[in-house]
Length: 208
Image (cartoon, rainbow, N blue to C red; front, side, top):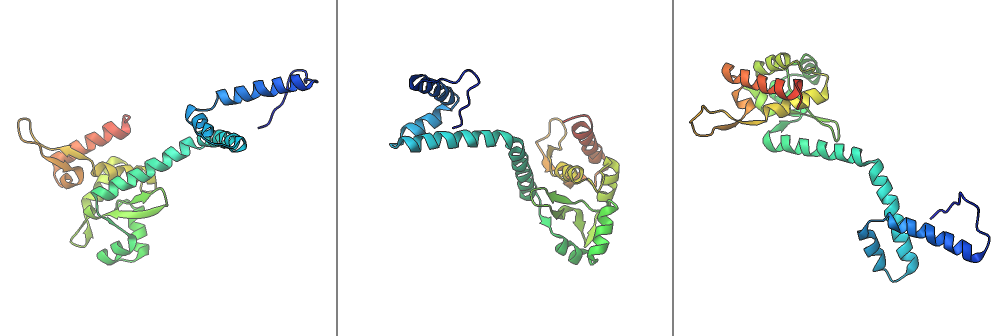
């Protein structure tokens, strides 16, 4: 613990001890109760002081990186949700299924013809299997990417696009039983596509 005195420096032993005691009490007053209880259980005074000092340093560190940790956790959870709801292909799988080269795949991605999900925790790219049918990418995917105004080079926007198509909705008429489906199962239905586009606009264009 570093102690600095802004006022006049005490000269006697008693004054010094009083000043240190005041500073130490101020230090203790800022510690969480859980830290104090843990330190109190330690039999050695030096270990108790070390525990309090270490906890203070950790608290300062956690405040500084709190936002980064929250972002990292959100990225991890987002990928887990996508992985749970959708079969994801890697590029090696996709080029084999489509019968194209990696260069051709890259060009089609840049042209907005293929939906890509990027795991932002490690940068790895995946391709939702629902967009593949009969060894081809369904043309409706390119139509939706263009219609929604998604920039193929914008990883965040493309990730939102994939997540949106995995969103579950009740596609039933009033009075009918619930029909909970994922949006991507409806993209060949013109009437449903209007709903999907409207929901996209409401969430991502006019604020979430």
